[in-house]
Image (cartoon, rainbow, N blue to C red; front, side):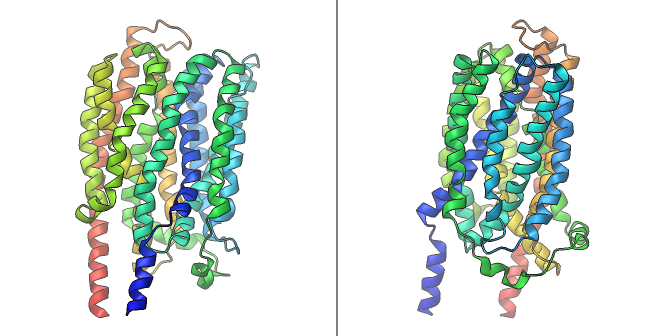
Length: 452
């Protein structure tokens, strides 16, 4: 009995060194996404002088292709059984993602429009459709084999969210400031990206080097290949995958419609002030530390619902703030709340979905479950990115023009606040539906204990 208790206590403890090594890749990718998703459109319109509608359409198509490659990546990971593990072998992709980011922002402005467009699409494709797809698909299978208990996974996801947020926050604060100093030309952009790519790329491979997978968990699956038919049965039987996919789809519309750089450049009038919004994220850090305690009192679905209410209020504040920095700070604090459960507890939800798969007589399929949700998210992210370019083009946006029209400024404000507000309403509804999964799993667990 004592041996069992000691074993359980050991499984509850989270090794600090292993924890920080694990979060290295998350810090690296969060920084990459801040840069690419937040500033690529501005780079393409104001430096490469491509039209916003054209760039938006290119990126939308690229992201939809990325959604398809995510499905193949999930299938590949679920059918991987090596002596290094199932997800770990794919961690090399973080280096490829950063190399392509450097090349993406090194596109010479003097190239022809067609060549610049092809270059942007190819680099973007490799970053997200190849390298990020592999990393995304490998995330959950790697995690559940690297950390032996649900308690550890929750701690890594919640406490780890603080580390990821710190990394993202540092890039969010410093990048617009450095951009204002260096990014006055194509060469300046290249130098700026290198400043971030080299250290973040090195941090990104810490997980690969120091965190091992427990390959014994795959012993029963060795030689067993996951079939497309089994994945199809999962889609047919597990309705909660669709509900969670809808939540992440709407969330990714917001992420895809990231117009912060344009907002601070043209509505506020100073891109460097965008760094202040990154500093505001520090207020969110203490909340991450209480997530495990909150989850004992509230379900993940309830946490998402509460966050959407506060975030929706934040978007209302943002719309009326215009260039009022104190109001924008308040709005940013409220808006950031929805990021916490959706960004950092996703692995817990995927674990629940995989457990429900087992209860239905299916394989767990963490990789395929993860990328199935990611498929919808990427499609909607692409739609959001495409809409930015199209809406800005319709509103008469002219890249590099310091004096945008009233119509253009209103459109930027709407993309910044009103469209995300509508998405929050949808997320609230689907989170309410997702709550049924946690109730169902709790009931199954109780029935299991009764039988034992």
